[in-house]
Image (cartoon, rainbow, N blue to C red; front, side, top):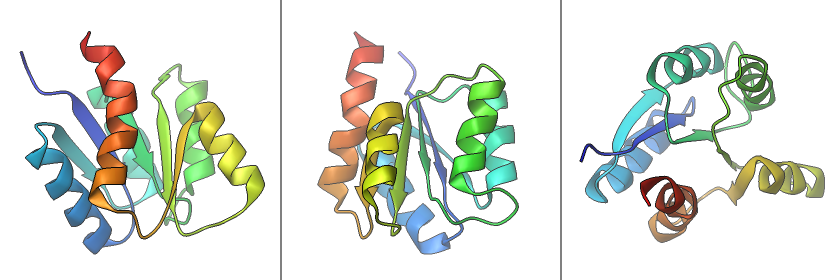
Length: 122
């Protein structure tokens, strides 16, 4: 069985590298985007099981990426992993998938991703 693919989109190279390492060590295939436009392209081309999005990214922010994916019928669970706080964002994140406030512990990231991928894998 092939590994489930996870999209990580964040303009911070450090965050992308840490998330990729954590997820690959757990057996996932990870594709990374450094801006919102690249995230949309990669999601549409690779059909990830989960998309992890920062809110503040160049070219398109996380909200625009989410909207673009929904408009293109790429219905992938979204995990907002961001330093942006606010009750509205937390509610939106939970409605679309999950919300994780940075800095995120590896165990918390894995728990959030697995809450969606365990359903896909069964």
